[in-house]
Length: 376
Image (cartoon, rainbow, N blue to C red; front, side):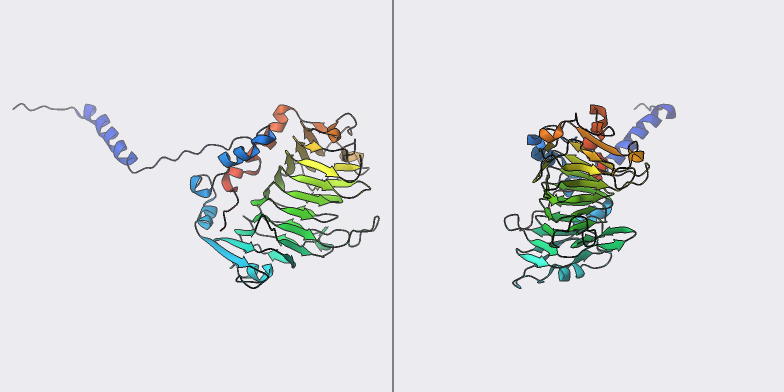
């Protein structure tokens, strides 16, 4: 029998390869792909959403770890006016959510109108308001304007916490229509969103002035309805509104949006994509107006009826901010989308300029955005 001497120089690479193979046997590779851009055709929205906004089980590698933990531990609380649930009021159900909540808590609200001033506190993340799409509950209150941090607003429902979700809910402020020219009691908010990473599906927002206070954080609205008179979508959030119907209900005109970006460094702005705009007035409603000097609002692929004022946008008679406002449109349709009568500071986006708004990464969607839950 012959003996063979193998050089250490020759043997070392072999041992290294064997060692790496043993390590790889214990590793499950994870590949994450970026979410596809929102399609140019409205008819493709549902298939795009189904293919990209997947349940947490299929996206654990991308999602915020605290969100994954919460989604693995779901709690369902039933609210029924007839007493067949754990609670009869939404307020009682919300109060049962513990501080430093770590579980996705679905508050399943039965049909009917709940006249309550509801607040979800900062320490109550991962809360979902859920209703039956065939018999949507209404959360309503007739609160009027209050002061918070120098900003005037009010709210039937106020959400301070992160990772909030609402599905199939009517949010309403039942305060009477304000008197034109009188500011007291005018602001009447149906929903205020302070928290970040909020997803809103198939919900309706009804009020007059300042209906929806989209105040802070990354937000996503899909298949919703929003109506009001003046500034009825306002705040300083970074938001995508997708396939949402917007209705101006004041026959004297009005303003749809007022964005609150105060500094150019603030990474915020409203993006309305594949939405529709209608109303009761004719050629009187502005798409947006000056609230803060660097306000940012964009409409993309939106169908605009004749309710839209040919000027499109308003600087409230303060031309000094015309160069700082970011009021823009891209590939919109309908009689209200004619750009020929627009104010000089209105921006017509190029394909390259529109691209970032059509990318879900605009709101960091890959890290937190989930589809609505399937509740049975």
